[in-house]
Length: 269
Image (tube, rainbow, N blue to C red):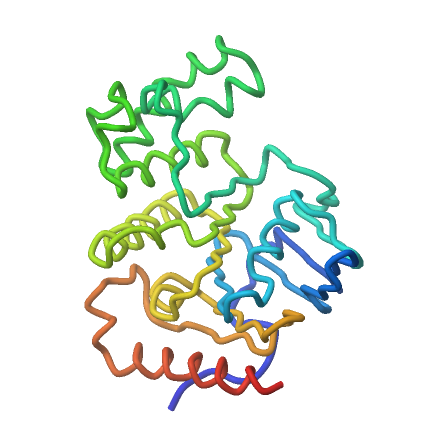
């Protein structure tokens, strides 16, 4: 039997609330689009949550609102007790592409946010810390190479380091590994788990992959078709650290089936 219920508040998370969204709506009047409807969400310190739904349901719009890149039409977005009204240094975001500048070395790309914010001197002072992050993600010795010498997975690992160098309070991930082949994607998901556990990172992932959501998350939020709203929060009670072997277990399969079934039912709401 699957220990999940149809509700919108995940169980077992008693850590400090970090991100809190209440009644978030988003409309685009010029296009006549109602993208999001009454989104309530709490992310807890050190937790990993995912949102999954059909294309066009508003997942990426939600992430942009959480990052301060788009304002909500209604509702509130709070991070560490302060309203999110624009981009903030305590928010780390990662997109589908690594977007490393080809004329900068790996280290120079990683410390770029520090350089933009505090100047070149401050960025140079972070080089040792950047190399430590490279060690963490398995890129020891690649600090002084240029992006064209990195594979797709290596470039994404460098992008993770760039996100972590500013020590953000929360990590927002927009399908960061979707462009990678399946084997590399599985490996990167395990690397991401290791990094999040090592940093006690509060993480929110947008994905189209049910398996990816289940292997990484403490809770998976299922989103309805547009206007996007959360129709269920599914607790993922697999033990940590997760391993790829878990994908073949009956419990993993039951969780995937639960989420897939809820997505299918949600299509007719």
